[in-house]
Image (cartoon, rainbow over all chains, first blue to last red; front, side, top):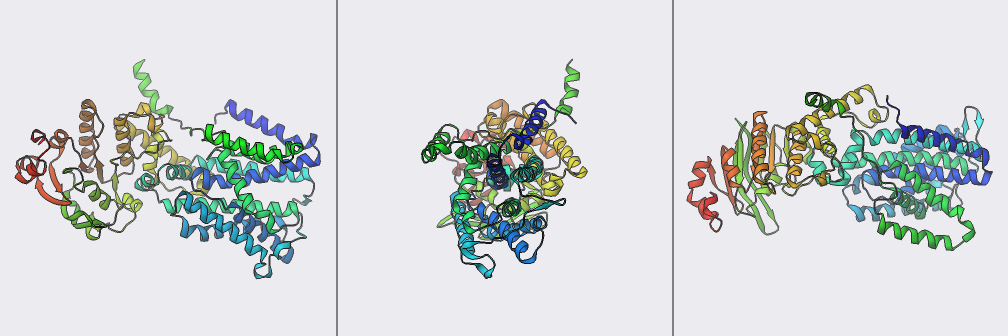
Length: 322
Length: 256
């Protein structure tokens, strides 16, 4: 396998980043943790919104279902938190499948409105204490800390490694997904769904799979979030969270993993950096967004073209020439 | 044997009768032309065969199977491929990836195989890369494999659409105005490519306004006017058919 210069730079950057809890205090480590959670959520949204071009602004709904699933299983049945992670993902995925099935043929703005509705339905259902399980507006408290290999994860730097470790796995798997038959199919649908269908791609099926993978991943992030906060309540899963995630993907670059990571750092990190400017920071933030949508519509770091090794198809021809 | 049999296809859009009781057969291994004045319903007939539209009545039988009501991607799976009149390439992707989209329906690897990059998945990727490059070479675009689709010239975009359609491994290919926007030299190359497609054992049905192309390569012609078939036969017969001449009146008679 080829090792490229870029890969080495990436690894070096990751290694430096991995050392950051050593120099940062608990507060800033926690900021990085938040960035990490949003980064993973935005990466999962990126499959739906960035890769497949489906305008989904209800991603917090899947996140909420994952978090509540873990919280309920942990507080009521004493199941260790991280064990609930697959189930949190699966339930969120099934929910994604059920809600997406009837709306999957909707285009652009119509889909956007329906997904906004879904996230509101979930939030209001949680406030109304559905089935006596969700604790109403107060939410659920007393959630256990996650245990990993017998180690209780409770300090910010411990969470840093849990969250960013999960983020690294996510990047690795999603990068592979992007460079596969599946990833290409999503891009074809985004570019021109009539041509995609006409080229033999079952577009409804692929849109649904994109939704389910996005929902599944968001659900798993919910588990980590529940363990980090110890208390979850409907407020954490408001429409605003969905908007933030949507913005991260659009700002960073639709369909670009590195773009989404940068977007998470900017959208979640910058307001912390500029906390001193208090209310003005939202104004600056808003103005920056407007400027970007005018001057750089493809996002800060748009996706790079996929790489294909086609040299073997040309070597013979070149040999004949020389 | 007829590969495709259209039986009494009718399609209305509101009050407009776009396709009126159209029936004709396409023999296996032939090149058939569907001609007629603008707005005669040619593209609508294509869309009825490929499942983009569902006819009000009638059947489209492919290889002994009625495809009416089937989803487009299933019809592609059965072996019917098409190109579009208004070019519909994946504009932001390069030529190779456009052709790879055609390979999609002949591939199997799913989400998990892709995430864990199984041996089978890697072998499949390698195989389709070969196939896609071969199709690019077939239409003469091999050297432009990494050019973004919308940066190619109009004529080359049409060829790329053909390569994409061929990558689905069709038995039957439908070309909607393949020479549209091409210069004389490109049209000449296109004629060779269409013949080569037929020589690969793929049956061709095409809509074309360039009569010199149609007369040169089609063995059988079907003429449509106001949604109905007004004449059918070999190019010589069609050329001299009074109804066809009348339909084209106003256009230059020399064209026919």
